[in-house]
Amino acid sequence: MTWGFPLRLILLALLVLGHIGFWIALFNRINATGLHRRQIKTIEKVIVLICLLLPLVLLSIDYRIDPESSKMNRWLGYILGQTELPKVSIWSFAYGLFAILYGLVGGIVWLTHRPQFHIAHNRQTILQTHIEQNLDRKNPNWQLGNKAQKSLRLPGNELMHLEANTKALWLDAIPEAFIGMRIGHLSDIHLTGQLPDEFYRHALMWLLSQRVDLVCLSGDIIDKSIALPSLPVIFGALDPEIPKVFVLGNHDRACRLDQTVRDVMSDLGWIDVGREDRRLQTARGKLAILGNERPWFRRELSPGFSLDGADALEFRIGVSHSPDQLPWAKQLGVSLLLCGHTHGGQIRFPWIGPIIAPSKYGSRFASGVFYQSPTLMHVSRGISGVHPIRLGCLPEVSILELRKKS
Image 1: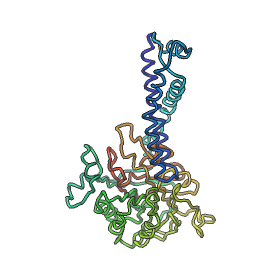
Image 2 (image 1 turned 120 degrees about the horizontal axis):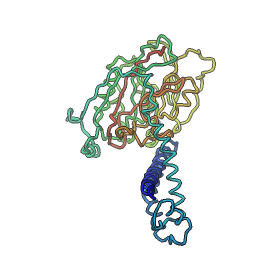
Image 3 (image 1 turned 60 degrees about the vertical axis):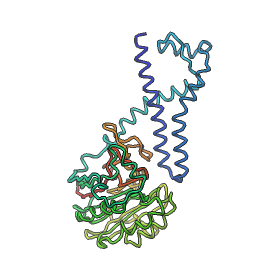
């Protein structure tokens, strides 16, 4: 048949895409659970192993098949236009059919859920972007760990770059007093001892130099106990007049330093909204800041903190480590939600964008500004990560200037 060869190519493409896409989707969503990091890393290895070995196992089963004895093989040979009958077991056929259907249906869904199709372009204006490249070379006195130094040999690795940007965000509900408020947002510090304290301090000091009214840190502060002395170096001795709030993330729990980090950050003047929601009195007025560290740390609204009977015009900001908490923010009438966790995917491909993102939404909310009424969500690419590699995905620190959408 003239259409046999093109059909085989299409089916093969769908088979490969469906097979890889299914295991990547599972990989992303496992990382969105509240399982301990050790368990997640074990499951990740199993997923990668199955993805690599399953085709080989199925091919070894197929090798022993006698195609002449199977009606299914004769039918497949006719459909594919092959004179020589294919050697396909029932197991390969079943999984192949699943992968092809997943590649067809899941591929369409995946394409429509690319983050570039969901970014709320009408809700943001980029006011300024400043990119600093190769900060390690410009500051030779900065001491990097061996792992980080080796990773920088990879061509195109943007690990020591930094994008400092200012964005105007257009909100539906914002009291007049808060129009023009400037919020510094940073996320995913991941102190491992590999990157110098000066790198993080450099990013934070840029934020504070931009006349901000509030600083929000959305989790994953530390990964190793050896980096505990870095906390006061990076986050201490800051302007006490500027409110600074934080939540923790999954890595803070994984290294079993969550309580220590809470205590140290609180002693340095940072407000822990992961442990307790707060109503803050700022220079512009009172606002409610709600923290969410789920699924790794669980709590409802803080004891003594209630939204019942609150002023209908109360301005609410949410700080969550993961963008998976967007439904929570919408339910509580949060106007602005600040998140991290996904690192923007860390590796972004031209046109396609990110592939890997630890979220139940996959890479849909990998980074950027997204809107689902009544909540506008800003997802930061973060500053660092345990994997010292960034390709097409610059570390980011942001100033968010709030405006009212008419």
